[in-house]
Length: 360
Ligand SMILES: *Cc1c(COP(=O)(O)O)cnc(C)c1O
Image (cartoon, rainbow, N blue to C red; front, side):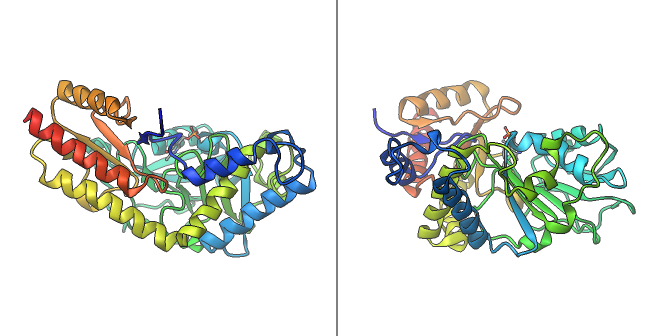
């Protein structure tokens, strides 16, 4: 069997050229006679891998010098605790709850201080992004938290919230490197890499330097202090070394593709093919308010759970994998991350058209 079209929300499709390169280097990385998996993270060869990865990421995202880039472990979910432990100096933070991941972060923060839910779209099953132009931001909030792209529901903040001068913290797991961002607008940007960048096991945290202090909540474990990792350039302990190596290859791939502007164009083109079809289809419909649609995760339904299941099964058989919606919402979801080729989306739409003709 050859490669399939993998629409998984994560872990997700990676560029084929990256996988081939990694395969070619598997047994002997650049004349070292060993795999990157077998290599000391303190070796010269590995030092170059992690430094180059960071430099390429800085270049791609235009990360200002007063921000640190950390390669950590524990997934995006560990940041749900690490953020309040390190940033809740006043023990107050405001959360905008636009989906399950934001909700989990909000719930976790309640363990460490007063977390306020200042806006939510839960009233309509998270199918839109609330108006965030004039929110009741807490006077003493240490930060305002968002999940910028909602992987499960398929919504995206097209405009950042007005935080009224407070620090913005964003989970960008499922839109990382999908388009240009102005890093200076954030205090912290972080994401698990398994959606758009690399293998599970790495989380990247981009954090403004002045936020990295020893003044953390009492009892914060050493491994959960940003300062420990920042001072050691992400090598305090053994990092997720092989994962970072693959991330580095994906950064190079994005650069070759033309950087984040080009990535955005590529992603808009792909998403338009699918959304245009959903808008004209008599069988399938998108579940999200048009203005808030994600470029990365596209949920859709037929309105009939049995027909949805039939579609998912037929699609699987035809080589379109992982189209089942998240277990909490049902229906279908096509995740069309950076590495999903345009051919994949075109082929999916052709398949959906055929299914529609046969089942209407
Ligand atoms: C997948 C995902 C998470 C959880 O990531 P883990 O690495 O499994 O902890 C958190 N936030 C968003 C937006 C996600 O898409």
